Length: 119
Image (cartoon, rainbow, N blue to C red; front, side, top):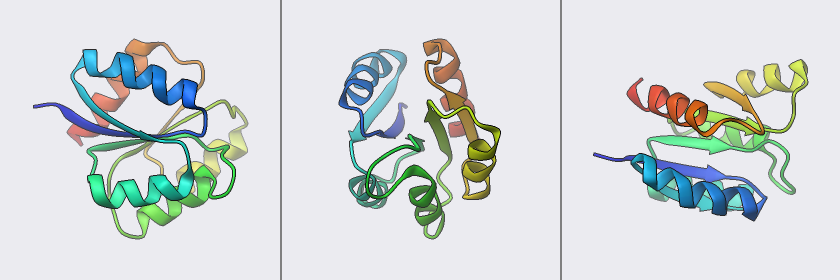
């Protein structure tokens, strides 16, 4: 059984690349490039894991994480270029379960997603 994964990142090159490689690792991948769309997709797709960027226009990742937590316990993995400890702490306080910085080795990303899906 594949893991249903929702990727929310405003950079189409990230969502496109992950949409190509992660299915080869056994994931069913859905993606969106805007926070509001990601919020709606979380409700309609009911993913096993959400991979979330922080720095997005409009509804950013921190606020999106908080909104998702208001209705769901889906594991959230933040995947961001932001490496500041304060930003990481804020993401975890908003309900993220894990945090990785870009760029991340594919094997590390796959392992962390699988771990969150098992929880």
